Length: 97
Image (tube, rainbow, N blue to C red; front, side):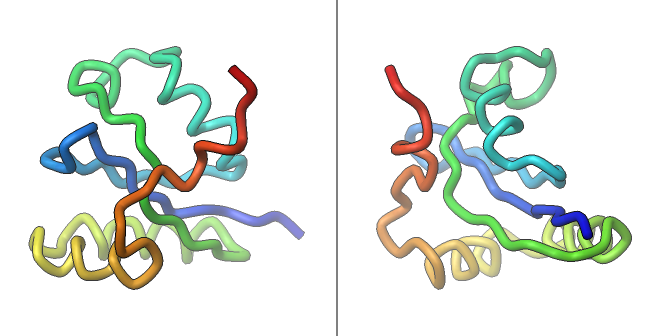
């Protein structure tokens, strides 16, 4: 059984959000933090993991990702704050410097 993750990243001042799906959250966040994939997150320095949830099937994860992307910013902020009221980087202890 696989686990899939819907996650939200932000930039340093919380102005820019990115919502994605992956089957390996630790690897994917590492890729964002180290700008290993060109695109939106590397262009706007979006690399702070502020929210994630898991799903047991990829279709459910993609459906949830699309749902979250359709929400207004206030609703996204409220969701983040249910898990992470201080907007801390939830991945900060995952990697050794």
